[in-house]
Length: 324
Image (cartoon, rainbow, N blue to C red; front, side, top):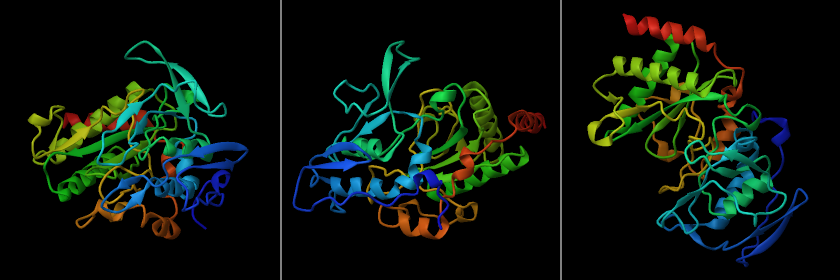
């Protein structure tokens, strides 16, 4: 049996008709209207909007634990991957009455924002129908908004072979080992890798960011020829950027198991560390391959939502390493 939280272990619910563009579906006592089902989202792969809905229907048991209770920044790509996308945070009054929203104050604009909270499959499919190919939840949940469940190091390459991204990820792993901390790696679904360090909602965003910064600095020390801490892309040509700034309230990354609006219909896929080696190819994790992988391995990312590391001890260990 795959490793799935029992609350989410449910069978797929959708059976979308192939001869209709629009359909009303009753799901978990809620009514959803799906529209433009035949709209092509991936022209080369000939995948339609209905394929996105079908995917999120099936992946929900694995994905929902990483969305529940978290404000969503909706990245909408309503006309397919080769057309413009846009972000939406503030939900209008016209959304279904059953959809859970939470009013939060934006740190940047100081205005109130009605964030969508995805706690169940109907909300997940509602987002998919809006054209949310990709899903972007906060690092923290409503009950502990100022305390993220994990810290993240985002490996963002600029014009480098993917082998250098792999090499950088292994340097991050070594850094975490020296800090006495565990990290969990996933593909971004694009050209990078994401490494999550569980914190158990025990530390503030500032503490998470400071720790990720120390991890980035020590990783750069281990691999100075291929990594960079420069924020400006022009100053980090042909390097892997060690991005620790995603560890702020409201910053988001693609969720585990979500699709990306990229060629091949790739998925942000959790990895075993033994897979992070030369030959790793992120394009192999797609809408059509991820379920066979889950059948064999289950959810590899569960510990990210666990009790977390001792940040104080790990910070002290990294500070001592930096002084050497």
